[in-house]
Every structure is written in C-alpha cells, then in structure tokens.
Image (tube, rainbow, N blue to C red; front, side, top):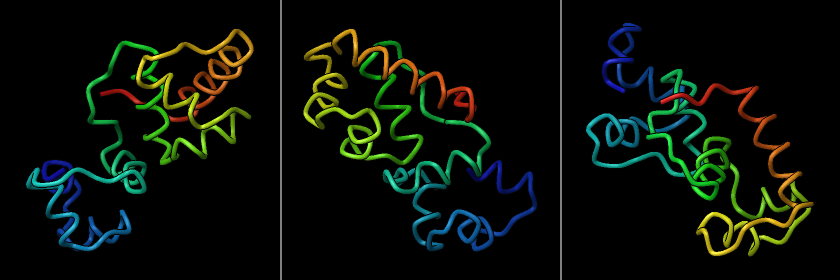
Amino acid sequence: MQAKRWSRGLKRHEAAQEMGVSVATYLGWETNLREPDLRNIPAAIRFLGRDWRPRVGSLGDRIRQTRTAMGLSIKQLATTLSTDPSAISKWEAGVTIPSKRSSDKLQDWLRHVERSEPMTS
C-alpha cells in the first residue's frame, strides 16, 4: 500500500480517508501488521487498483475470494443466490459442491462480478 500511496503523492491520513478508515487502521495495513477486514477489503482493492491476494484455484477459494472482494458476508451471498448460508460455507470449505441449479446461479454471479470488477493479483 505504501508504494501506491507514494506513487499518488498521498499522506497516510489522505489514504486512510479515501478508504474510510482511521490512520491507525491504515498504518496497520501499510506495515503488514494487519489485513483489512471483510468490510474494508473492497476499499483496499479500489485504492490499490487490484486485489493483492494471491489468485486461488479451487471453486471454494474462488467463491470466498470473490465474495470477500465484494465485502459480502456468507449470509449476504446466500441471500443473493437464494440458498442457505450453510451451503455457501460448505462450498467454500470444499466439503460439498453446488447442485446443478445452484452451480448455474453461482457461475452466473461469479461471471457478473468478475466482469464488473477486475480482480487480478
């Protein structure tokens, strides 16, 4: 984050303000003492212009990374997909795979989200 902040000529308090967090919170991210929590991940991605987290391969990892990049809780994604939150949890953990119907909804959501927000690492 520091390199991005410097490249834009921003002071720490300006970067923090842009992301809607305290300077202390931003400083924790910049010094790698903390990572953004779920509600702040989308703002950090917007600030950096990319998702800094490594791309992952499994469907469960892809669901989790896309969901968190959007700042969605498991419950919120379940509502969006009209499914049970426990199903989302199990998909993300790789315990189960979505049914055909759920998989179609999930794939449509993933395609829609990934088209509208670049998520490269």
